[in-house]
Length: 215
Picture 1 (cartoon, helix red, strand yellow):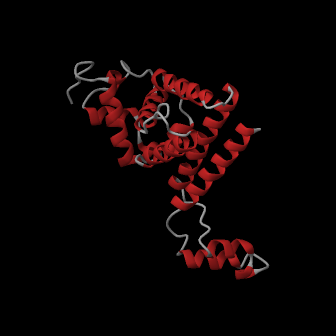
Picture 2: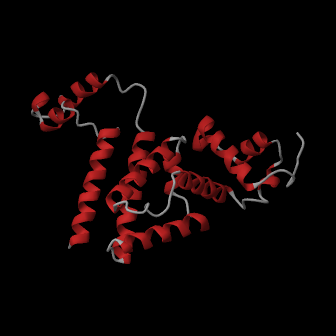
Picture 3: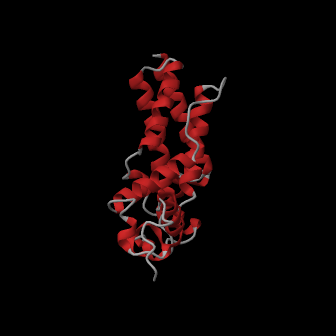
C-alpha cells in the first residue's frame, strides 16, 4: 500500500470517506486503521488532520449537522415553522448515516457549526425569546431529534417476532389483557417511532415553546 501522507489527503476527503465507511460497517466497525486502508494511506497520515478518533468523530458530526441546513429562518418565516422544519431536516440528515445519533450524542460542535448556532439564537431573540429561553428551546428540539433518531437506529431487530406476536406477548403481562390502555393505544396506531410519532412530538415542543414565550 502506497502511503501518500499529506499529499492529496484533505480533511474533507477523510470525513467524506469516514461517513461512507460508517454506512458500511457502523460506528463499532469504524476504526482508524480501517479508514486509513480505505484511503490507501498509513495511519499516521490521518493524524495530520485529526489528533485522535474522537476528533474525527467530531468532524463527522459537524458534517452531518451542517448537511441538515442550519441557519436563521427565512424572511417572513415564523419561528414555529422554522424550528419544525429545522427538526425535520436534522432527523433526515441523521437517518442518512448509520449510527449517526450515537456519534452526535458524544460530539463537540466545531467552529463553523457553533457560529451558525449563535446566528440562530440571535434570530430567536428577534422573535421575542430571551437569550436563555432561546438556547433552552433550541436545544430542546435538538435533543428531541437526537433521542428520537437514536431510538430509531437502535431499535431491537431479529427474533422479537411479528408486531402481532409482540402485542400478544405484551398483553399477557397486563391485567387488562388486550383491553389494557397500552394495548388499545398500540392497536389504534400509537407507535412510539415513525413519522407520525415524530410529528406529534414536534407539535408538543412547539406548543410548549409558544406557552413559554407567552409567559
